[in-house]
Image (cartoon, rainbow, N blue to C red; front, side):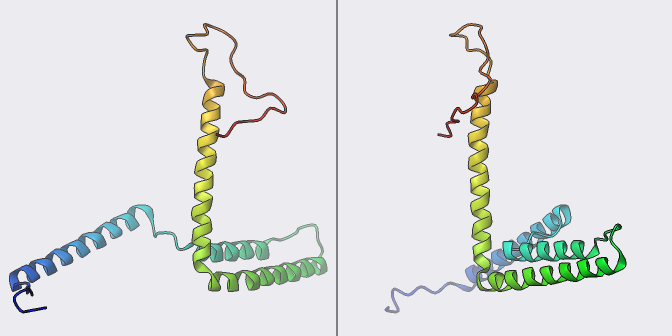
Length: 154
């Protein structure tokens, strides 16, 4: 580039851009703090949430007491539960470590499938619960598909 085509940003514009960037960052931090206060801390990634679930289930299982079992049987059950929980953690942890994004994608796909299912069901329910049409005149209500009938999801 030649000196004639190069354009330097004058100092006032650079300072203005820095001030704008700083103000935006402050606004974003304030909004995040407000949302944290209102809704609590944001959920972690799907992998982190899976870890929390495994930990919570393992704590719950280890705390269960079987009142009808004797002390010896209770000890055997507790040992078996601990082994199962350790095996589950050993199986889950490497998968989470190697593929943390996979769980985020699976969670997003599950949300999309749920939204599609809800849409299909709501449409079908609307057809079932809709009263008689004015063109048909008063008549029997459509009670939905009978046994063996196919529900059209299109």
